Amino acid sequence: SQQGEEDPQALSIQEGENATMNCSYKTSINNLQWYRQNSGRGLVHLILIRSNEREKHSGRLRVTLDTSKKSSSLLITASRAADTASYFCATDEGNTPLVFGKGTRLSVIA
Amino acid sequence: DSGVTQTPKHLITATGQRVTLRCSPRSGDLSVYWYQQSLDQGLQFLIQYYNGEERAKGNILERFSAQQFPDLHSELNLSSLELGDSALYFCASSPVGVWNGYTFGSGTRLTVV
Image (cartoon, rainbow over all chains, first blue to last red):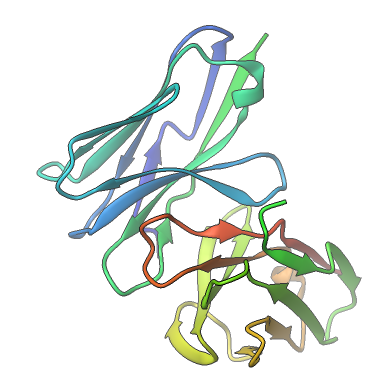
C-alpha cells in the first residue's frame, strides 16, 4: 500500500524554471525522504528531512515538511534538462521499511 | 555505480517458470530490501532481511521467496511465473538505521511471456 502520494503525477517545465512537487502521507513518521529515478534505472537518494525539521536545503533542492498537514514539498530551482526523471517521496514510520509513493514524472525541456 | 549489484539486468522467461534474482549489498550494509516496480502499482515493498534474518514482509506473494546468505548477498526466487509478474525488481541496502536513506541497485527487468 502507498503511504506517500505525490502531486502532480506529471510536470513539464522549461529549463531554468523551478519545479515543485508535493507529497502527502497518512501516518506519523520519523523522517521523509526524496528519491530520483532516471528512466528504468535505480532510485537515488536525494535528501532526508526529519520529523522535527521544517526545511532543508541541498544544492538546488529545497524540501519542506509540515507534520501538522502531513505533507512535504520538493523544490528544484533553476531546473536543467538533466533533472528530467521521476521523483518519489518515501516515509519512514520507524522500524519498518520505507514506503514509497507513485512518483512525479518531471520533464525539463531545453 | 551505487555499490549495490543486481544480476541479471534483464530476464525473459515463460509463464510457469522459476527464476532467481541476485543482489549484493553495498559493503558494510546489513539490511537488504526487495521492491517490485510495475507501471500501475508503483514501488511495492516485498521483503527485508537484516544480517541473514527476515525482518519485515510486505506484499510478497506465496510464489515468491527470498533469503540472505552469510556473506550478506540476497536472492529473490520467483516461481510459477505469471504474465503479471513482469516488472522491475529492485534491491536496496542500508546500514543499521535509515538516516542516510537506501542505496538502490540498478534493478532486474523481468519479462514473462
